[in-house]
Image (cartoon, helix red, strand yellow):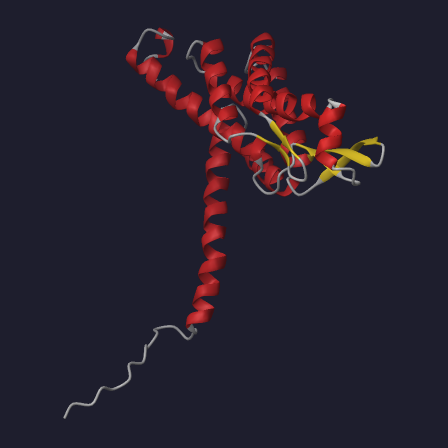
Amino acid sequence: METELPTIAILPVPFSPDQILIAFAVLIPALVIFNLLLISEGIFESIGLRFYQAVLVTAGALLGSLIDIPLLPVGEDVIAVNVGGAVIPIFVTLEMVGRGRVSRLKALAAVVMVSLVAYAFATPVPGLGITMPFYVAPLAGAVAGLLLARGCRTAPGLAYAGGTMGTLLGADILNLANPGVLSALTGGESTVLSIGGAGIFDGIFITGVLAVILAAYAGRGLREKGGVCPQEGGE
């Protein structure tokens, strides 16, 4: 007569299964954030920032997304500006324009184009904030950059400027300037309304990164196929 013996798992490390699950729960998000940091650092270098600047901007966007600076009291409410989602994108855009990496007029045109799209798609949600499908602003920024740069190397920079500044202007500022939207968002309670703020790796940050990626890859494809930027065809 056969007797079934209990099976005991022998782990090669001195940790319990619960401890291993907790370790995975910590390590997986950490690895995701680490990879996002690497990608983001490369993206900022691609639009002309030096390595140390790209690292500072990426780290600042991550940590700054948790910081809101009070800007304007409106009755019992306070309109604030988020460091990671507003201040740093503004700094990066001004740095690109100031150093002549992108044309001022084209950057302004990209911002206007994206802001119109963002305003049309943005939806104020009481108790939550201003929402918009995540793909709208990056696509609008990339398209604006490619059209204004005609597929050339300045397309990613214009895409970043249009995607970030256009979203801030069209989705956030223009909606917050509407008293009806403002009162609907607060619901009659004292609220801090953060321009550009949505937690770690907020929407503005992701918008800028995705817009640059889309414009860079699409622009390279256009140049490789010829017909645009023939002087850059050999890159």
